[in-house]
Image (cartoon, rainbow, N blue to C red):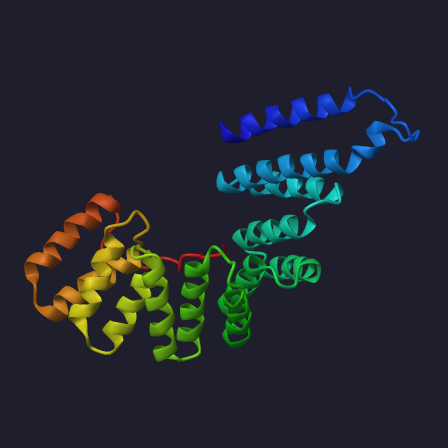
Length: 262
């Protein structure tokens, strides 16, 4: 429904642009010509909104088509390329996502959202050290509104290069900014579990399981924690929660690590 509404808005915008009068100002310049950059910006904005809506609905090919049209306006190109990278990554095209992000960063080299996304892409594809450097550049931009997400990514990158203390610090900073941040709590739970602090791991996992973002891996770790603590009643309760959350799935298996791009 959101995409349909935006499509109707796009149609109305294009119709208005087509019907714009060719009046002139006192200098002889066409008013329509003078308004062209503003019209292009509006078209880019609508195309971007459509692409975001289609992306959210999992219609990746349609989202990419809208982004191509947005790019052709010549406006918002860094934002267009950044969103294109997210769509391509979701499709499994990590190389294409990397190319789009590099192009975007050539336009806006200090954009913290682009730096954060590039950092996580690199961490996720095997170059965690370089990825962490990008995320740190994002965190250096004090105006960045999504600092908690960047801190989470910094923590996950640190885990991948074996810096458990740094990872703990980053995850704790993320939780300080967003107390219910599920990926940060999950990261802290895994670090606590690895160090044998099962009570602390349980405390963080309870925060994760209270959200809609809890994954199968989180439940499996929670079950392991309760076994370590010898709490059979809690283990049975988790098994019941599993059946409600994943009906028909046997206890076992794993889930992919959640993305944190923006």
